Every structure is written in structure tokens, then in C-alpha cells.
Amino acid sequence: MDGYDKYAHEPFAVTVDLAVFTLRDAALHVLLVERGQEPYAGRWALPGGFVQPDESAETAARRELAEETGLSDVSGLHLEQLRTYSEPGRDPRMRVVSVAFAALLPDAPEAHGGSDAADARWVPHGTAGPLAFDHDRILADAHDRVGAKFEYTCLATAFCPPEFTLGELQQVYETVWGTELDRPNFRRKVLATPGFVEAVPGAARLTGGRGKPAALYRAGTATALHPPLLRPTREGRPA
Image 1: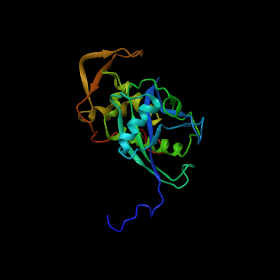
Image 2: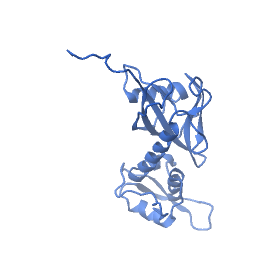
Image 3: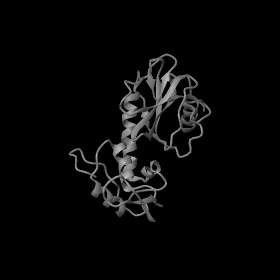
Image 4: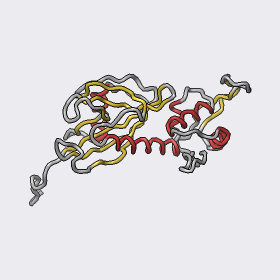
């Protein structure tokens, strides 16, 4: 373009960071890598890296996830762009703008470090830190986004067995939201939401209690929840 000087502005780099969550042993886990290089060598961080000139941010995110953690064939991965982090000084190397992604991965395989990551592992959410760079902030924002996805979508059923009880579905919500829900209220709202779950005719499972076996359900045909299944308010009113 005539009159445009691409050297008139100071160059900066674009990176991607991924906050990937899964459920393991009835606890919410996040995927972290141990940095093998400076800055922050030896510190834990979110997986990510620099966007190459010939790729989109999402392509870079999937590439970095595979290179740093070994998770290349991740069927069921729900990946969405979270927001952009552009505060000056967030990276000591140079001016770096990061496009962050939030992700959910049911049935997550084991991770292993690769590329410039010395190690990679699933860590119980809230037990690791402080993370390198501004990754604690990114992780907190991503956790809030994931909680919101469970309000408006049917993603929670992906973390249940093919046939599950409403108690198992409730446990998924409680694990992700980090709060206890009122059982009768939860059951009523789930069953009143069109297409959320479908009853498995004649199927039931003993749950260890003294009552009758619990009915079994499977994921319904809906992808969005109408009305939404809202998280408890700050005052503690159950959802």
C-alpha cells in the first residue's frame, strides 16, 4: 500500500495460552506445563507459545497443545477463545500479546512434556501456583468461563458415563462450580429443561443408599439449556 511504512511501529509478538480443564477422581483438574527455558524456567504455566506467521490463533493453540503436552488426538475437546491479554510488561522478553483459550476435555489422556516444556501434568485446580507470567489471571478467567458454559449448554453430560444418574450429573456440576447444590431443586430443573437428558426405559442403578435404585438417564438432543441452569448466587441460594 502506497505511503505505508511497516517499520514505523515497534514490532511485537502474538502468543496463545490454553487453560484446559478436565474431571479426574471427582475433582476439577487443569493442564499445566513446567517451563524448561527462561523466563520462569522451572515454574508451572499454562501450555502455549508463539503464533507463527502462517497460522491462525486457534491453529497455533492446537499445535502448542500437541507439542508441549502430547495431546494431539483429543476427541471431544471443546475449545473456545477466551479473551486477549495485552498489558505491557506481561512478558519480560518483549512486548507480547496473548490470545487465551478456555477448553474442556472429557476422558483426558495422560500428558507428557515436549518441545520447550520440561514436564506436563494434570493438576487439581487451585493447588498449583503462583504460575508464570499472568497465567493465574488467565486461569481464573477461564474457570469462570467454564462455569458459565455449564449454565447455558449441555456440556456437563460429556463428563458422565453413557448412562448416568441425576446424582452423578449433579456431582459434575458441583465439582466444576465448587459448591453444593440442593438435590431436589437440581433434579426438578434438569427434568424440566427440554432435551437436556432422556430417561433410559426400565434402567436403574443401586447407589448405596437405603432407598430404591436410582433411574438412569442419557444425554438428550439439546445443545443449549432453555432456561439456563444458573449457578448459586453469592448469597448462597441453591441453583
